[in-house]
Image 1: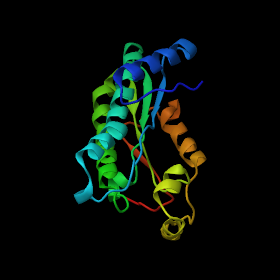
Image 2: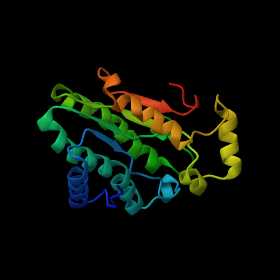
Image 3: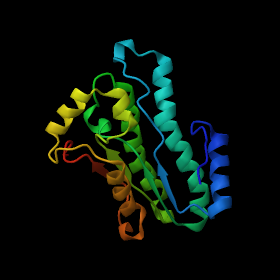
Image 4: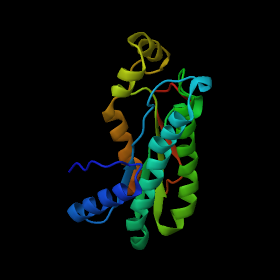
Length: 194
């Protein structure tokens, strides 16, 4: 079931969660993936409104989704939250992406902080940090030449796919990862080895 919602609006997020719970029951897993680069802009050319929009789209949306899901998970003392950060959080991103990298870095830190806060309640929090994934993001914000150059630097010599990300999310969200919390799983074909 698809539910369209402004993930930067607390009331819209709460409404979306309520509608999902009406249809499927209490929330067991949250995959918080809202976000985006918005546009490339060098730091010295980035206006405050772009900076604030990046914070809203990438960080506030994650906070609101987690907060809303926790209202369902905490009383049952069970659940798994999987926010999406980015390789950019760890390497600064590409040209003109400092606002994006900073907000995704904040999401990465939030994963650890939230894992500490809710772990004793039986709720696990693990982040996903995709690298170059063949999506509209790179169609919009990269050139074919730029994408080719990234692939040539990537040890597995290809872009990732949505399926690569989806498959990686299944494990930390499942009971098979019952002792995994506060981790960031990097999905980048070896491009950003840490």
